[in-house]
Length: 283
Ligand code: SAM
Image (cartoon, rainbow, N blue to C red; front, side, top):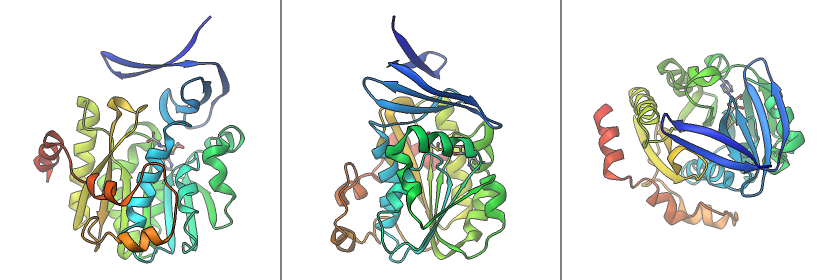
């Protein structure tokens, strides 16, 4: 007998991954949480049937979310992660000794508990004493802060269900307010490839451009996300992601990475023409 997990990427496209077994399944107050074991991708987490991460390719997403802004901002002391209940973003942040506080606001405590139990590769980040977890809606949480964080990482689900509010103009405006005067926000920015994802991506970009003076988009290749072509948003009050890249300083940290490097940092901001056109259309 063969077991397969299938996610519908469009009406006409599906991604299927063969599964050895299902190791966790629960319906939380917010979403259905499943963790599977697979021969090709190792363990993987899905929320409401949508792929969140696999052990095999999560390094791409988490390294690109964390190291790009960390190689630009010269003095990150206080970071806010919104979402990110699997711990992968926090794990990458905790590699920087100069960071003093890492706050994580996750709407669903059950995601964190399940990942600590079944996905230790990503959830090991929660062991760091600098990490404080708040279980709340990121949209509400961020409203309370002004001039507080050096870096905000929006590691959210897609713009429907509990993640919907994390793609609104109000949310980006509040992130701007919660950041210090040279703060940076990075968000997972959806994919430009399939129509519905591309629409969500353009809508998010338009709202971020309206909220931040510097707003650039960069890309990475994530095999298990729809089309494998994924974007991140880099929104900033002061620093430019390429002109202010601190190549030597970042290299001197000696961090070993599997995907990110200083050339790729620059190259990731060089976007295909069809993506540039989509972005220009809403700028
Ligand atoms: N890498 C992932 C992706 O893009 O597929 C995101 C991973 S992480 C598991 C996303 C987390 O965001 C989930 O655990 C979810 O519970 C959390 N989340 C969704 N909406 C949220 C909200 N409004 N406030 C805080 N956390 C939220």
